[in-house]
Length: 124
Image (cartoon, rainbow, N blue to C red; front, side):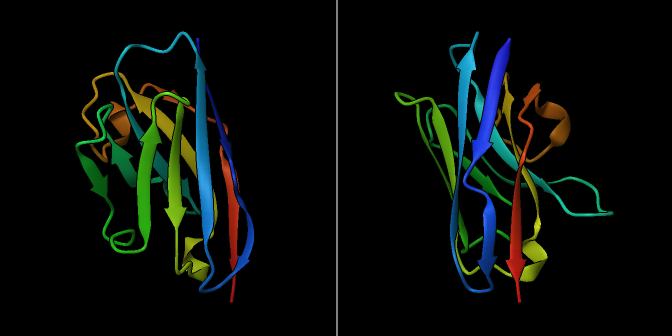
């Protein structure tokens, strides 16, 4: 069993920043990509960013380019998402997930294990 726990969500004003962290534990495979996704009320879940095990390949959704940065520390078993210049439309539950195929893509179907999510609310 793989356990993923997201943290760092909260309430922030537009233009502010938050750093989300995904901590993984349990029977994790040797190599896997990690992605961040989000789901706003009444909307489908969408990819935000993804990173391969080595960290040599990253993927960002268009809305995340230039504002969000994904990074990982395999020694600490964490994957972070730094979010800057937040907008009200970034309000959503943010999830991390791992892809055993280490593709680092934005395709939700590639991901095998998911966390419970952390709420991010951006006020205008």
